[in-house]
Length: 231
Image 1 (cartoon, helix red, strand yellow):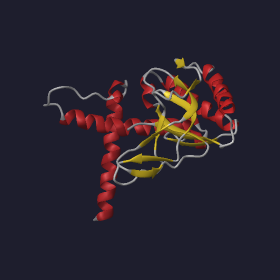
Image 2 (image 1 turned 30 degrees about the vertical axis):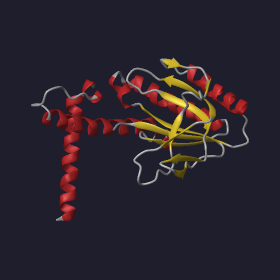
Image 3 (image 1 turned 45 degrees about the horizontal axis):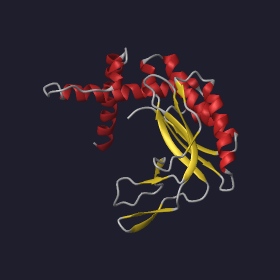
Image 4 (image 1 turned 90 degrees about the vertical axis):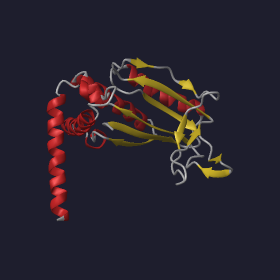
């Protein structure tokens, strides 16, 4: 649970491996100028430890299935403290895999693909400026990939990808903080008599108690509204 950027990247089937590497190298150059904590080299897919992504349409009898890349390129970034690692890449994947004797379509097969996500929310625990650097930095890299002719589909929990409004991003961030703080607070209260401790990144936020109180109030109002609707 948290504010994340989900992204799916695609390139045409007729693009060469060299072209894919060149496009990712340009995106890496952008990353190097963002002040990220770490930016790795553009590296080839390792057949002994291949990149993998989940199937587009997993059969109902399986909770999760992944497919390993056959070839491709990627680079790794770490925007900074309390932000998740963000990978960017493009790989070729087989059109089907065999599981329990069944041939299952992966949803890929032609072209170059990659999808993943990066949770940026808890970078705000460090500072608001740090959060913006992390979140907007990931968006800038995706913008570069899109300008290079790739198909880039993004589901941004902060709605910045679509709106390009920083105030909208901050509003979504605050809403998510409140929701997570309310849940974390409830879990902590319920587990007070149990051994161990509840670990939740949001509790490190300097305004945790205010966020928790606001989140609880929002949830209370929603429950009351739903009760009136069903009465």
